[in-house]
Image (cartoon, rainbow, N blue to C red; front, top):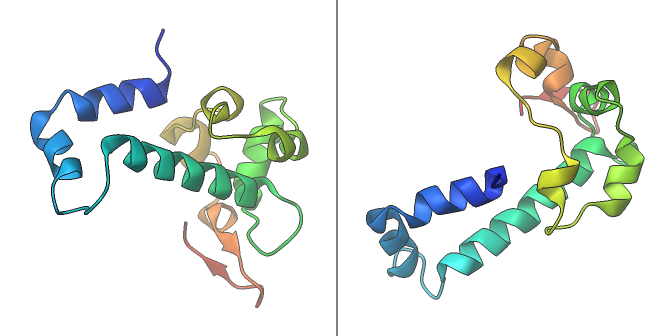
Length: 118
């Protein structure tokens, strides 16, 4: 079965109008592969930030969500790459995340101890 990433990429690339947008001057110098590579890198960086104990980028609900699935957040932070993120990260759905965790816990804890919505 294809991964979510493969399904999404297949969806975009099967739509000629979306694929053309990526090739046109809307995104100068970008190929569709560049688009996907950049997105994968951002996803990995954000996952590391969300799971990390250190720093001010912690999202308490996401860290707990990962722990509740029997995974070790620190291990994921060390092992995650652009090649394996779709197999390491659990799938988030409205019922298992948004409904279960309080909105305040789904926010980023900032240096001033205030929260900003994610």
